[in-house]
Length: 364
Image (cartoon, rainbow, N blue to C red):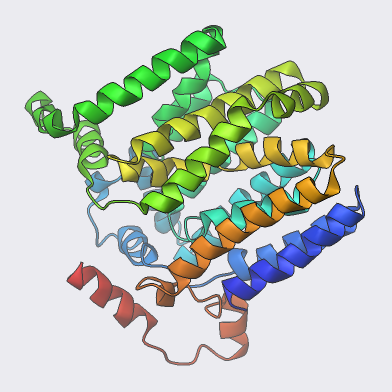
């Protein structure tokens, strides 16, 4: 099934959920569809080929975080098939995402629908981030929403961008002061964009190279799309009704952490005007939280016209961005027809998927 068709099917299921609140059946059907089409996707995207090379000891381990490198070495050493590793990572990620959303969102099917559309293709082949994101979600679920320092360090071992989750530890600062200080930091960062090459004077360590790469990645974002995301996140973070409703239905600690993570996503989207890679990397960690807060607010809206207008606008934006991606130069690498079960039933017919991916990297 094409991801565009799958998104429409999930929208229909979400609509049934809106009309029949608290019906676990719709959530179950949606998760089964996603497990099958996303969890069992095979050779989807372009990153998998590099991870496969690393797994088979033909790539440079020093290019990756130590936790992921060691895990790959160990599993390869005990002869675990690479694709068993991939499917295990995706299963753990999807399960932790579903559990998080089911526990804290009153419209869970809509939340996983919005998250899936928004994050595709980032939930397919970036294995390091899928592991780090699972660490975040499982940490929240097992520690009653608290993010410990151990969790941050552990996640950092699998993806360096995870260190920015440390932002959640700043909640001891009063919210107004935190907002002012954070916005000032964003503005100063944007003004200093041309001076980050001086970072290399600090050495050539893995961390310095990673920071330099994130801050100098120069592919510009779609400005119109970026503005819409910023407006949505501003609405979620600073709308009084959204805050009041979520304070009532979530514990204060859960609400505070979810707000902090949503606000962090707003900050990195503001930084995306000059540092688009930061936004791309942190989306997978942070995206579920503003959707949870937003949909909890939607649940209690009594004005049906306003309620369904908001939902329609959000879905329309998400679907339009996904449609644009799938019809762009990268879309051909993300066909959900590349499914391990389907390929197995067809006895793995010959194809040129791997050749196309290698040509992509050769021409990049």
